[in-house]
Image (tube, rainbow, N blue to C red; front, side):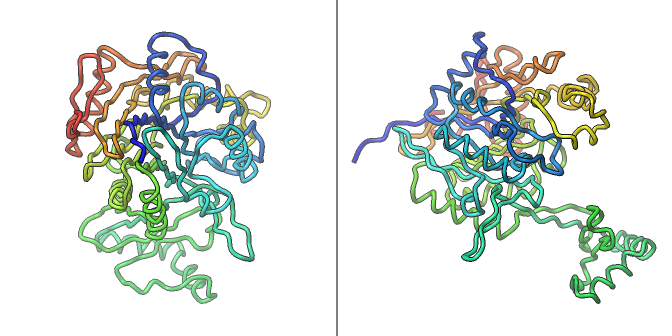
Length: 452
């Protein structure tokens, strides 16, 4: 049997790329690109559709419709990326046609990707990437999505629906008896109770028999995306979330498959949802991450909220709860559908730049106004024969100039800037019991592994 060498895996967060960035040659940028190129496996979340704007703009999107020219894929490959997650809340911004065009561009370049497919099984399946140090398997899913974005399963008599791999989550709103009684009074006053009984009588829904659950729902105006929530009787008001059991078990099935056919298993999840603050993940995210590690994953890499969250060492494996942004060309999307002009109250005769400028109030609010969205870390994980040996963390900064085209390009941070980023990441990670030691140059190591 051939001997496997050690293998390095570099991880990044969201890449919202609209223009080429490989052309930049300054030292800090070259150092970052060298880091990515030298790794055997370099991962990023591709949060644009590099489909040359093919397809039809979806009736709704989460923020803006993110498409790009397909040559951004060549640029990402030139930088050194070779493993892509494509499951996120922008996967269907240009409908099924736009998704299929994206897949065509990825496959034309022989790019390894996961999280989307022509049906649900394809979207759930892992991709396998071969290196001289062993085989890496990656699965990708998204929890932040519109229901029409998720892939649908094929049947013998029916084709499946192209889409993304969903990890839905269940929400339980808990209220005290007094609070629920107040809701019941509002329910009756607005006529919701009467409408609900009519729906039950017509056979469009069933009655809730559990007396500890109160459905607060407007069934009359349901297509307007109005109220729909179940409230549970409890001693205090809380919100609990947990992974949808069916999605969880289906993902675990493929994690186990990947475990039996590769040396290192990665799970990528796109999830915006938070708990006490935007820097802290929702409860279901932590539950899911630990469950897939129990099933055989070595690394869980999460992205979506566009800022850093902490990391956890669970059962000797790695969970990165958010790696923030890697490329942030949010305001450089080449063109937008009419829906975006209406959404932001911009005249149809204007240009995309006007929309983004209004959205950020000339850079005074939103992402441009907050430094947390323009800094991150790049973990490099060393494996030997499938066993994690070390984790190094490299701080990065994204440019954030006064003009949009001077924003969103990453480079390696150093000095005081690098130390501040790492201090912040260390603080968030300490909440999970993770110990990080920072060197004078800002590079950090994670304690608890043989080579650290």
